[in-house]
Image 1 (tube, one colour):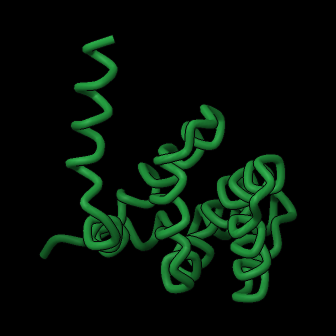
Image 2 (cartoon, rainbow, N blue to C red):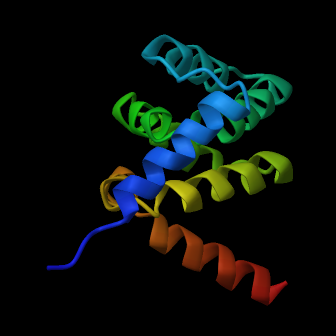
Length: 128
């Protein structure tokens, strides 16, 4: 019989973040507040929201799950089309971290046809 150590490791990481880094567990309200920042038209507010997603929400497994359930992925995919390089970099980083989870990866794939878009970006950057 083979033991799966991944759930135990995820629990230990979350406990470490909660107790040793003084990070409170993320609530649904916290996630919705950060998503409101992502709805802003101001680049600086959106950038701060993305930083909060990376530092606060992705720090815990429950935060990432709540972010996915709250349709946060659609904002990240939308930011890929932005010309602001900082927003693009952080959005791709967050999407990459979220896509390590199978459910989140499927959600990204169904949100938009992101692969075609990335190929277009790659082709355009090689032409210039």
